[in-house]
Image (cartoon, rainbow, N blue to C red; front, side, top):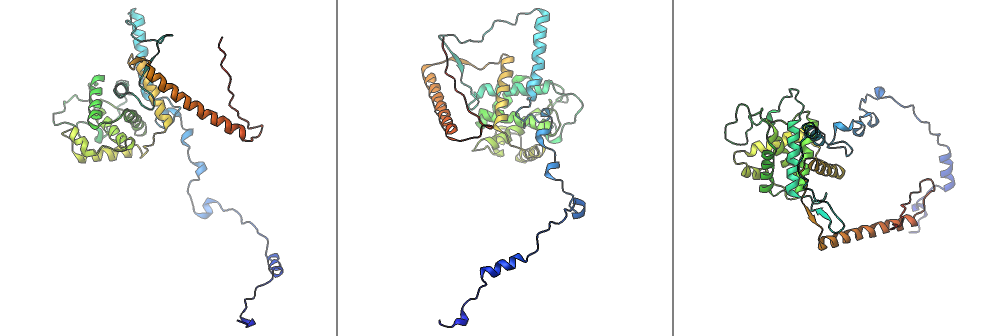
Amino acid sequence: MGNTTSCCVSSSPKHRRNNHSKLETYRPEPELSREDTGCNLQHISDRENIDDLPMEYNPSDHPRASTIFLSKSQTDVREKRKSLYINHLNPGPVRRKYSSCSTIFLDDSTVSQPNLKYTIKCVALAIYYHIKNRDVDGRTVLDILDEKLHPLTKSEVPPDYDKHHPEQKQIYRFVRTLFSAAQLTAECAIVTLVYLERLLTYAEIDICPANWKRIVLGAILLASKVWDDQAVWNVDYCQILKDITVEDMNELERQFLELLQFNINVPSSVYAKYYFDLRSMAEANSLSFPLEPLSRDKAQKLEAISRLCDDKYKDLRKQAKKRSVSADNLQVVRWCPAIIS
C-alpha cells in the first residue's frame, strides 16, 4: 500500500499539449476518380429520377398523372354526345336528384368507405373501356395470361375467344362473383384497378379478350393480400373457380409480381385519385351513386365530424402562434369570418 513505485505515473497536461503541438498539419489527399479506384458504380445523383419521367408513363405511381381508364372512357363519351347531337336525339329524361333548400341529397360512398356494389360496377366499366379502346398494335399475349393456355374452366375454349369483346355485365358478374365469395371490400376493388393499370404500364401489354380474366384474377389476388389483414389464400380461390389448380394460382401470382417489379405500394394520393376518377367516369356514363335525403342522424354525424376537424385546426393555429419564425418564411393560416348579408 505504501510502496511509491507501484503508483501509476501519467504525463502532465502541459507535456500532452507539447506532444500535440508537434503533430503535422492535415493535408487532404487528392481525390481519385472512379477509373482510378476501379469502381464503376453509378452515382445516386446520376440515376434517373422517377419524378422526372413523363407522368403519363406511370399513372399508378404518380398522383398527378391522369388515369388510363378515364382517358379511354372520355373517347366513348364524346362519341355518344356527338352522335346525339348529329341525329338530334333526345338523351331522355333526367333522373338525377338535385338538392334544394329543404332537402339535401347525399350518397353513402366516401373515399374512406366506398359503396361496394357501385364501386365494383365502376371498376368493371373501367376494365370494359380498357378492352374496347385498347391500342391494337399486334402486341403478343403473355402465356401465363392467355386463357387458352391456362383456362379457368374445363369447358372448351372457342377458337375465336380472342375476337369477341366482353360486355360490361359479363365483366361485372366475374368480378362480383370473386368479391362476394371471398368477402372482399370496396377498397380492394380500387387497388385492383391500380394494379391492373400498373401491369399494363410496366409490362407494356394490353388487356384484350384473350387475357382479361387472368389479368383481373391476378390483380384481385394480389390486392386482397396487400389490402386485407385476413387475406384469402390461393387455395380458397380454387374453391370459387372449381377447375383451377393451386399450382396455376401460385404461378400466376409469382409472374404477376415479377411483371409489377414487386412494386405493390399504393400511396394514399394515388388511391384517392382513382376513387374520384371512378366517380367522374360513373357520372359521365350515367352510372350515378344512389342518392338519399340527408336524415337527422346523418346530419348529426356530419356535424360531429366537422366539429372534430375544427378543434384540430384550432390546435394547429395555437401552435403556429406560439412558434417563432422568420419573417421570410412566415406562413400563417388566415381565418376570415363569414359575412352573411
